Each structure stands twice: as C-alpha cells, then as structure tokens.
Length: 141
Image 1 (spheres, rainbow, N blue to C red):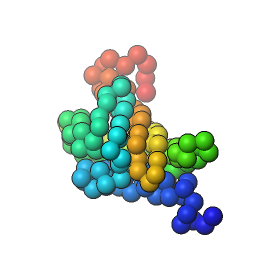
Image 2 (image 1 turned 60 degrees about the vertical axis):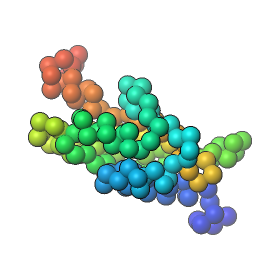
Image 3 (image 1 turned 120 degrees about the vertical axis):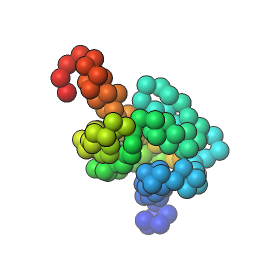
Image 4 (image 1 turned 135 degrees about the vertical axis):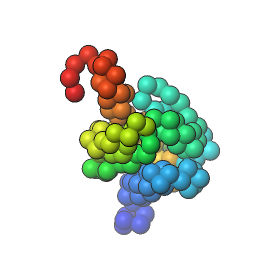
C-alpha cells in the first residue's frame, strides 16, 4: 500500500482539507468533504448536520476564529473500514468584544468512511474562557 492508497493517509488529508475550508469560512466548500448523513457534535452537545450550521454558530461567538494545527493522528478500524482521525491544536482569533486570543485548546475527532466525513465531535476551551471572562469560573485558568 502506498501513500496514495493508504486509507489512513487519505482520511487525514480529507480532514485537514475540510478544516481548511471551514476556517475560511467556506461552508459550501467544506460540505464537499462530508457524507449525506454527516453529524457534527459541538462542545456542550450541540448537534449540527451541515458545515454551514457550525459556521453560523461560530459567527455568534467569535468575530473570527482559526485553528493552528498541532497534530493530526488517525487509526483504521479494521472491522468497519472507518478511519478515526484526531486533530488537535489551538484556536486563535477574536471574540465578539474585540479581545484577541491564541491559546484556546481544541480537539476534534472525525470518522471518515468511503472518503467522506460522516461524524465529528468538537471540544475546546471556549466555554471555560467565556465563564472566566464573566466572573463565573470555578477556578483560575
């Protein structure tokens, strides 16, 4: 198996291309990488079925936001053929109040099946940072 036919290498490339399109933001371009039954679960359990839903949610929270990738790891599920891809790093951007940020940790988990992303789970520090800014954090960040 070479790099062109390795499902793990292909799935990592699909996820990174999807994330790049999502950061533009270009939800229509990102949609080219997802399957018909795509499900995205954001931090807090918010469920979306299209990349444009996530872009609309992010537009309410951030003036703008991007991801600085640290790593993309993947593993093939030999029983199903699915590839589980994990992308982690830092969010950076600007909150709606104009305050910039750059060390907001994130971890995204993807399931890639037959060359399409069918599921994504998203975790990040945004809610904790918002609580801290509002004086509601239970401990210092």
